[in-house]
Length: 279
Image (cartoon, rainbow, N blue to C red; front, side, top):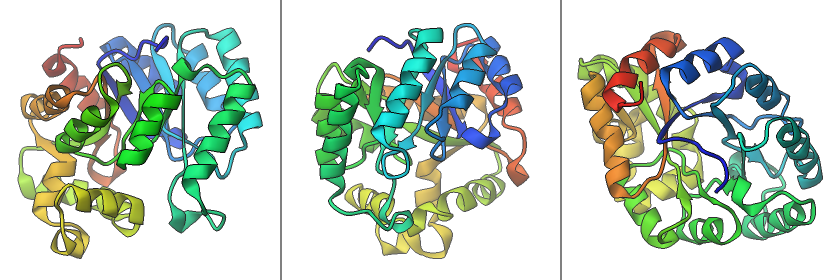
């Protein structure tokens, strides 16, 4: 892969990433900003963030194949990388069936989309796939630089690395809450997991593969499930939770900081920088 993501990045909805946040996390030493929640195909937000910073990479996590055609995103990719070479990683994926009426034969959709990106000159080494299940994880290693799993655990990372083998990028997302009181931390983390992810079949099915059951999905998610998906505690405890992904085979972890009331994530990223050893 030609884009240097560093070991740790941040994950946030593209609508909530301002240039001020990008500049601040770059200064803290984070290597990448992952733009979630299906950023638009024009990639204007990517261009704005790269223009406002100097070294940090920007990745999409992810552009939805059903809503943005491959030709549009390829043209945007070339526009962005011509101005900021080596700093943009294109993440693409198929989203989930509950939000897309056309969601049929998703694997075939991915193959066709990747073929079209090839034809449009988007390099394999500068794109990744959103991947959870074994079949798509394998595809991500064959047809892209690697995989960007979302809402997973270190156990999933271990299994994903076994499927990918050595070489392909493995860059999971993980949510964190900087709060030592478990009840307060779960009160922040549970809504972010419950809505919408516990109502989406691809995420629930992946969690079932990891051993979670209907009891874990009831009432907004069991404490066991929430604690696995949202690491909470002080900075050192959270850093240990993130390190578990590296121990399991991750190359990079995208941290999604959650705060009470949807507050500013920057204080969490500031507190974690030292514990993560990136400052």
